[in-house]
Length: 504
Image 1: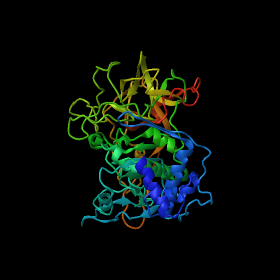
Image 2 (image 1 turned 180 degrees about the horizontal axis):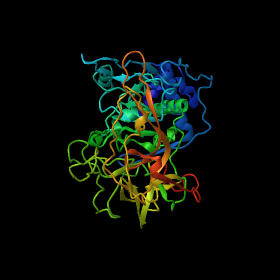
Image 3 (image 1 turned 90 degrees about the vertical axis):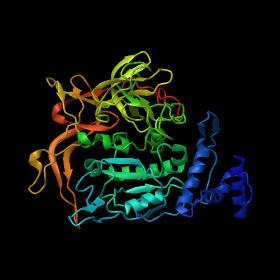
Image 4 (image 1 turned 180 degrees about the vertical axis):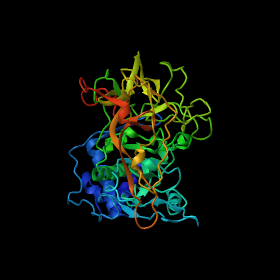
């Protein structure tokens, strides 16, 4: 702290300004302290610093130290009314952010008509944008810039720098990037890459990056009407596998150390209890700072990771710490057990995800998860999940089991001549009578074909509706005609924050 204060004082002196006791007199020094040469980016950084001073903060470090900053709501900044330069609306970015453009490649890759690395579209006119997908790069940003300019590689809409939060756009949001591993999700989503490695959150997942990302997502969500919840703003690790055989190849980022609770606070849509503790639905909501489940594989296979706050909650077959972990038969088709490896999603859920309650036993709560009862520790004095209200689906009376899908396709007679019908591929899980899964929206079955040339391919739109459900760690879809809706009431919801545990 003293070192930082000395550097800030040196910056103030270099600007020819007095070492004043009035925080507002330090605005220019704080903007310079950001390290950014972009004026809009530096002003945004300074605004965030002063907002933290006004609101106060409390953090627990990785070694257990308590660090507190008392709130000073009387502090004012920027007395001259300077709000930072307002950047032009190109690229597609909120004006308070520093954004630039680096085009993704759109070119042929072979003599047989192959091309990459994205599809032309006309969203939202030809297809609604429903999702925003959060990625981490698992590489440094300069290497990712090379990737996105290679027509044989994947693509995404935006990249965000870890160091200073700078935003680079690569593809217009009206067009479809190849970022999620599912063409169905790609066609209705925007993909945002965050520089970093999921096993090194403290080194890469910077507060500046979180705040910049939240500003960008708020802007995009408002522009396209995307709900600010965890069935519409989700990680690459929550994208449903489009077919049964693709499940083992789906990605794991941004991983268990991405702080979803803090992220949604920054989005202005805090994750919280919306019903009483005995509700038939629960939202997973561990306290990130103190919730530190064991993980392995951060530095080498089987090696324990350093204890760290986490958004992830582990699931067991019985209400006991000694019970086996829940198995994911799609993730481990050879029958291998779920593990504590940092990249193994087979037996865990994440902050903000909402599930139907399947049972309670003492300090343990069971949820319906991929066709099974899955148990996690949820003590009343320090809950890892809170009551939730909303809608659930359950198989219609008389149906003993219904199929679950990783994409919502059009009915077969909706495909026009010349467009190949996409084969259905139910996921290898059971959704049986009596089970319930949470839904926040429904979609019509659609399919967007590949484009090449100067015009988008037509979007095939079906008449059959599907419900999107929180089926496991990943999302899934069920046909409307196969299910009934069940509502979990919001009665007896606690006061804001009452059952949510300590704030981040």
